[in-house]
Length: 222
Image 1: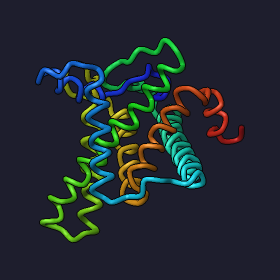
Image 2: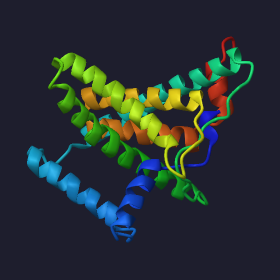
Image 3: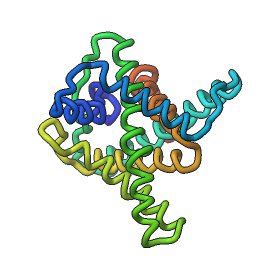
């Protein structure tokens, strides 16, 4: 199954590797830059500084629901391939391993994947592609092509570089589907829900839901 590989966070690895090439090797540098960027976003957008407990709980519940939706989509795809393909492909892994000695370490890694990958591919790449496509298409088609294009790049990025996976269709298809899922959330629900859904998905499949339970839920007649 796709979901039982070791915890990985490709975007974090790519960003840190790039920063190291410019001499920024301190482990705290990337989180600090992230916090400064989010602070600038808050100030530039003129957003409220206070959020009610109800709003936070509502976002948490919504993120978990969307995370569960992606769990079912991914497991359904895997089961269909198991059922209809005579030779099942090896489940993919992501770009770079992160130590997983404790549950807390794994949970932090999952949260990091949700934050870094969504900022890189949905908060940055998706609007950039939309802006370029808007020069040639109406708003609706530009959004659709930006969602599809950024999702394909999101999937393809896991197979490049010395730490990338060996390409195989199942992993590429799932990652592209997940990219379109998150990009659609970004367009309709914003960055907060998208990051939350990504982190919720990772935690659900990595820590909370046993594979046997997922198989039971999705197997007809069980």
